[in-house]
Image (cartoon, rainbow, N blue to C red):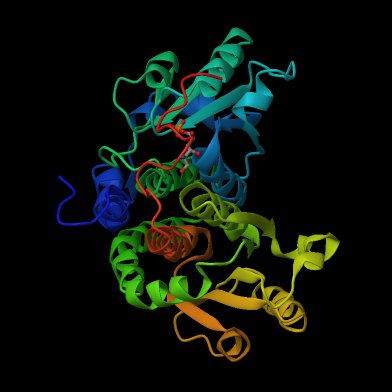
Amino acid sequence: EKGGYDHFMLKEIHEQPTAIKDTYRGRMLPDEGLIRMAGVDDNLERIANAKRILIVACGTSWHAGLVAEYIFEELARIPVEVEYASEFRYRNPIISEKDVIIAISQSGETADTMAAIKLAKEKGAFAFGVCNVVGSSISRETHAGAYTHAGPEIGVASTKAFTTQITVLTLMALKLAKHNGTISNTDFMTYLQEMERIPAKIEKALEGDEHIKMIADIYKDARNCLYLGRGFNFPVALEGALKLKEISYIHAEGYPAAEMKHGPIALIDEEMPVVVIATKKGHYEKVVSNIQEIKSRSGKIIAIVTEGDEEVRDLADHVIEVPETLEPLTPLLTTIPLQLLSYHIAVLLGKNVDQPRNLAKSVTVE
Ligand code: M6R
């Protein structure tokens, strides 16, 4: 049942190229220059004219929501807010009939996300669900939606659900951008063609596995770990830290790289591994100077870089390469080594990777 892998988590990490293909298949039609998504098409005016998109979710799905915020605003130029469902539901949020609320949930059963959707609906917002489990409560409670086609995710640590959520939300953003005229036809086509290359590029990123395992072995006894990223990759830093926390029980924090100097830099010494996402473009030079700041305080740097990068290689203790892609799509690649890193650390520490202590796959109580 684990398809020859030691754990479901590892199997699911490796399923990502297929899961992403399954998610865009039939929706993305590059030859016709079209994205077809029934849930969006049937409500196109309502969604495209939203004054604001509110995204509610928990955990990893909330991180996918943060990535989507950057992508929607960049491509479709619609203002987006991303909220923890648990906070949103209890703070008497201001919601209008012109708002579109998107609930992201792998299980479709998360209690707080469900409550947030009910509340927004009561206030007249249009509710859209991005769920993985077909027929789940959230998929039924929303007015429309688009499923991720990740297949069953068994490991408690979410992996393929995250990348397929980003895939669905990117398609949605592109579709709205095209409709609203905020993207040129050429750019639209470039995105579609590049999206089709993502599965193969993930395969390439997965080839770094042995190297990542070696890095895991060096840092497995760390007590703390910092994850830094900027822009589209800031939420990836949060996600990397969450993965490490939940399966290896090592304290980890994700930060926007530039925030480091507002506090966390005080933590850095030779004992502290810092994982930095430093792919090309995306504030690259600024991230490089953040890396220099860490280095001058003797922090250990594990950098995720674009294939062929030389500058960071000279500074970092370890570099992990991912293929180049369009900047808004980089989270689909930079996430992969972070999943593998936390997986290998947890295995080396003898932890129960698929069923970490104190955690359940779906959180149906608040
Ligand atoms: O099923 P959902 O996507 O609504 O679940 C949300 C979170 O409970 C979930 O992502 C959790 O944070 C995972 N264990 C993360 O790996």
